[in-house]
Image 1 (cartoon, rainbow, N blue to C red):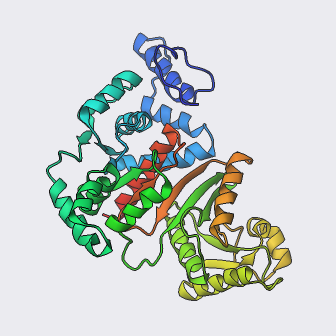
Image 2: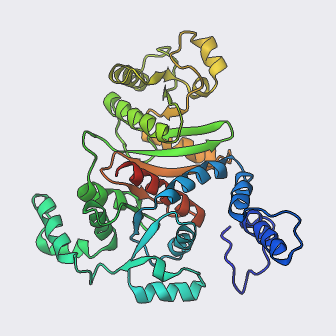
Length: 385
């Protein structure tokens, strides 16, 4: 539930997650100011300790929020007039996580803030209207030059560049901002397509991939591919696994990669299981520094005792934390089932393989999810500068 203070919500509900982290520090601060408190405390440090009590998922994301806040980056939000985006930006500037750039009409942004009673200081954000921005014509020319042999005329380039998602991608490509967060009102392909056309893949990358972080009580699990590659072969699976394993390291996790299948170590001969086994072999040869095993069933991958019993010569030193699914259907279904039936918090999708940080939001994402994804975008941008 999205709680917003106003005429309909004045007294905090006990299950509002902000009760612990805002009300308790406010009471402590008032007690110190009035002289009632017997002990002086650092309010910011007290609030951080309280946030750490909210559970594993919150604790994990707080680490990235703190990393982002050490060196905030400029992040553009093409859907800058959306209430959820504006509420998230209020948190982002308050906690100094990012420097938001909102695309849209200033008048419309101000109207939404008034109507929704959102407390966002517009002096702390930048608002850019693509239709009147001074860089528009230059962006049109660059986009036409990039796509003129793909059927994009100058007229079409101008139409598309006036559209906020395309304009935001060009801002990222040109280095005017450090990253983009988009997708709350668009389909996934409608965000990824212009990202590939304008921002492009990082040097050396042959594929992009979608990853979800599953914040399980036992630790972080990295799922892939969950959103991008419909048709997969062994080379694609190996590339996806390599990108996710490297990304896991940025989270302070030593990756242990499992190529998943319905069979275990050649127990069943089938095209899909052979593809997963081949992918494991390709990645093991390419990256001998990584722990890679497979093909194997999902229960063996995460149950190390069972894995060693079935296959004593496993190359993994513990339960797998990078799970590579044999196809997009399996990966997409798996993270959604864990989230909906298992109650495991999911953070994503994280788009890997792009030249600059591009983050795609789910349409039904919460304000907290937008804040978390923006923090990951900032941390990603920090690593690219």
